[in-house]
Amino acid sequence: MNAQQLSERLKRVASHVPRQAVLADIGSDHAYLPCYLALNGHITKGIAGEVVKGPYESAVKQVRQEGLSDVIEVRLANGLAAIEETDGITTVTIAGMGGPLIASILEDGKEKLAGVERLILQPNVHSKAIRFWALENGWAIAAEEILKENDKIYEILVLERPGVPVSYSQQELLMGPWLMKEKSPVFMEKWERESAQWKRILLSMESTEQTIEILEKKQELVEKIRMTEEVLHGENS
Ligand code: SAM
Image (cartoon, rainbow, N blue to C red; front, side, top):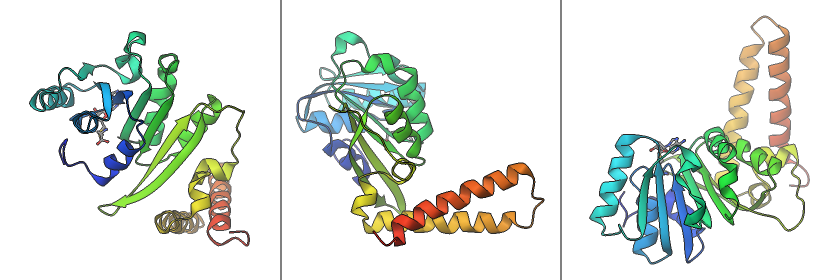
């Protein structure tokens, strides 16, 4: 992968960035995503934020090599601390991390999101943490995607500020309101796998002492299996 040849996962993330966006890509690593968008004339200005020195230096090198130093600024910063109000950021991308880490980056820097119109988030796991954060913080899930690349399944969540109040059921928070309507083959595969895994864990719990913690964990798994199976095989599905 490089700035000209993005992974399918990052290409799909890029496809949700509005034309002429002023972009902040947080956790940018090599800055491939902002470089790709700038090379295609898709963004007018971008910030690549990185908290770790090694990836930060790779990003600086990449931007310089591509001749994009006038368009993309690389900043060594933790999460949304990379953004200044004067940057006029309209779109934020955060990709390739766990859902809880993405949600904590958003939570810790939410005052930096005042002028931001769209968040494009690509959690590798536990996207529920992001949907829950969205619900708690007045963002709506405008679009969702699920894709498989190199045998790994990824989700992409696009958040925007809703015109009206939104709410999500537990099932929607877990599986995604748009994804569970669409029920693509990759979505079905993901949740069949998850459900089978939860059933195995549940079975293994039968042979341990039935403490309160174990009973609570079992109840939680039973509920998640029920919600999942309802979407996968339910009568209204
Ligand atoms: N976004 C790229 C992608 O999707 O291919 C890189 C993903 S890489 C697995 C995650 C990157 O996020 C790492 O380079 C890591 O250093 C960076 N990162 C993790 N936590 C961060 C934070 N709080 N602020 C900025 N960068 C962070």
